[in-house]
Each structure stands twice: as structure tokens, then as C-alpha cells.
Image (tube, rainbow over all chains, first blue to last red; front, side, top):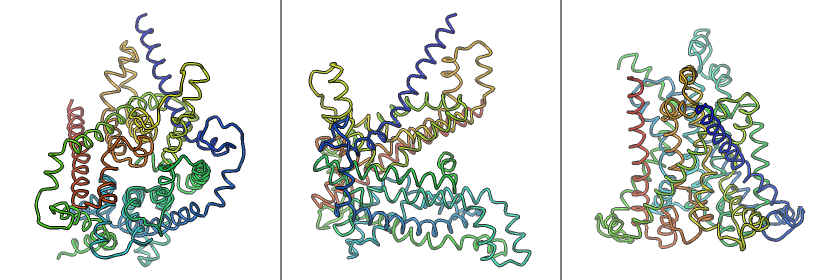
Length: 269
Length: 285
């Protein structure tokens, strides 16, 4: 009898914490979307009235739209660079049993372990010492390094599942290496490539530690701009930006889920 | 070279461009960071360990580092307490609940850090949700200060980093052999006892992996630390930023970032190694 009492307490505790955890995971995103439709001029919750005024205001705020565009461009460039270079490297590394290959794999994964601020600072110092001016290009370079580990892991996992006999068959039937890559390898690792591009894009778009040091007035990116705004005042326009970011991310997630099965890829990481 | 080793090396050809990029834009900068930290003055005069001695002999700097590591540990512990029940429910549920929990975990993981932090400013602010609720329920007489406090920062970071904990814990619970828990319950153990004596020890490596991820992420979370913690709580990321960009004392900033990197990766590596030894211990039984 005592056992069932303990069981009931146990289930109660597990259930309560789980409900609290699920609420905690959901609430902030909901709160951001709700507050972005406030008609008031403060972040008072619940909003005193409803309106789209902050979205209208946002459309007229060139100083926020410009960093957002910069962020999109930098993220696109970093995604393409890390997908092409990282994808090629993942193909080369996946099957190799050489010691060199394992050492390189560890090197390519290390940006994930290292606090990114140290890396951002080190890039700033090197660019300064070499007299290289900060630009969108230097920003893309830094972001590419940060994105590579995701590409190496996700594309690498897809390559591991690829049956090597298919490649050998293609070669022995007279197909060139490029033709084999285009018609056999690429279609089979497509899901991993799409999922890793999605994660790489988000990683770059959201990056702070590297941008903090490498973005200057001309290449200001969205997260740094929002941070600067929030440090100064609690501006409601940030809520409207957040609303847009949440909706676009959700749309992107749905697309990535359909084409790349991204949740499985991230879940198994 | 034998033909076999030539083919093996040829396989590595597509790796060369990325290796070159990593050498130029990752290895070289980090080497420069180490070199710069060894100069005594910001004008790069005289090589010495002065910056590191300055750090070690300065109680303020030591406090900043220990506070930062403590924050990471507290947040990771809080996330662990939330993640286990969530994972237990996930494993025990049907398809619908599993999809729902996966979605809830992915949602904050994919939402921008600044957006997530901003949400906590709205929740914890003077006119925020918690204050409004407590005042209208009559539980509090005046709005409490929640934003710009240590507790507020721990709460916000716990939510923001919870997905990093939930995923590895769920994965290790899914890999757990269901026969073991059924055997324990069949032998008369309560569910609580099954959890403590069977589930917890066998999924501990997953929990440790999650703990380390959250620890590192929370300790280095510049945005959340500065916006929710506020200007009065100084932690390593903002200290490094201030020394590098504000004061422009590059040698000290370099030394700070290296000490911080060593502290975080050292803890992650040491606990990770203990965890692997523990796994070998389980397998041996």
C-alpha cells in the first residue's frame, strides 16, 4: 500500500514539473508574439490595447531594416561557403580511416567547443595586425568557421548511411566521378545537406559573439543592433522585429521539415 | 607510396580547401591570441606572463570568473531538474504527445537568442507578466525587482538553454532497455525507486552530456547575461568585451579570453572523461 502512495507522489511530481517545463518552453515565444501587437508605448503585459502600429513603425525604421538585410546576406554567404567547403570535407572524411582524417575532423568540430567570444576576439586582433579593414567579407569568414561543425556532423551522418557499393557500381558502369557525384551521391545525401544548410543559416543569422567584434558601423547585423537598442531603452519595435523573426523561422522550419526532415537530424545530433 | 595508401590519401583531396581555410582563419588567429596575451603592455612591449599574473592577483577578476562558472553550473542543474520529467513523459507517451514535446523543444532552439532574451525582459520587467499577475492577485503590494537580478538571469538562461539538456536526456532514455525497468517494477520496486536505482544510473551519461552543453552555453551567453543580468552583474563575456573594445587593452583581453576558454573547456573535458570512465564501469558489470 505504501508503494502505491510513493508511486502517486512520484507521478504527481513528474507531471507537475513536466507541465511547468512545457509551459516554460512555450511561454516566451507566445509572449513575444502577443506583445508585438500592443497598442501601448511600453512593454506592459497584458497589452492595454491592440494595434499593428509597431509593425508599421518597423517598416519605417531604416536603421533596423538595414542591419536585417545585412544579416540575411551574411547568413546566405556563410551558409553557401560552409555547405560547399564543409560538404566536400565531410565526403572526404566520412570513409577515411587515416589518422590525419580523424585529426582534421576534430579540428573542424572545435569551433563548437571553444567559447566563440575568444574566436571572435582573435579574428579581430589578426585583422587589425594585418591591416585588413573590417567588412562584410571578414564577417562572412568568421561566420563560416562557426557554421562548419554543423555541416560536418549532419552531412557526415548522411554519408555514413550511404551504401558505398552504389558508388563503385556507378564507376564500373563507366560514369565519371562528377557524374556519379551529381546523380548518385548528392541525391542520397540531400536531406543531410538541406538540414545542415537550415541550421547553418540560423546559426549565422543569430550569431552574436563573432559579430560583436567583427561588425562595425557599416556592417551592423540584426542581433547586435537589437542588443544595442535594448541596452539603451526597452523599445517596443524590438517586439515587432521578434514577431517577424519568429514567424519566418517557423515557416523555414516547416519547409526544412518537409524537404530535409530537420527535426530528426537535430534530435539525433 | 603503395597504391592503397595513394587512394587513401586521394580520398582526402576534397578536404584541402576547408583545411586551408581553417588554418588561415581559425588556427592562425588563435595562435595570435596566445602570442598577444604574452605582452606586458597594450603597446606590445616586452614578453612576459604579466597579464596572467595580473588576473590571478586581482580578486575582482577571480570573482568574475568564479561567478560566471557558478552561473553555468546553476543553470545546468536547473535545466537538468526540468529535463528529466519532460523526457520521462516523452518516452512514456504516444505519437501526438511526442510530436508536441519535440515541437516545444525545437521552438526556443530555433528562435533567435535576442528574441528569447527579449521575451524574458517582457516577462520579468516592472510592468511584466509576473509583476502584473502578482499585483492583481494582491499577493504583492508593490512591483518587485526581477529584471537585473541574479535569480532572473538564472531563470531566463534555464529556459533558453533547456533544449540543449532535453535532447540528450530524451535520447539516452530512448536507448534504455525497457525490460530493465519492467523487471524492476515486476520485482516490486516503486516507480520512484526504479527511477533512482535503474533509470537514473543508466541514463547518467546523457544527463552529463546535456549538463556540459548547458553549462558551456550559459557561461558564455553574452546577450542574456548583459540584458537580463544588467550592467551591475559583470561576467566573463562582458568583461572580455569591455577590456577589448572599451579599454582596448588587447593583451589583457586576450589573456582573459584564454583563461576563460581554458576554465570552460577544462571543466567540460574533465567531467566528460569521468563520465566515459563511468560508462566503462557500467559496461563491465
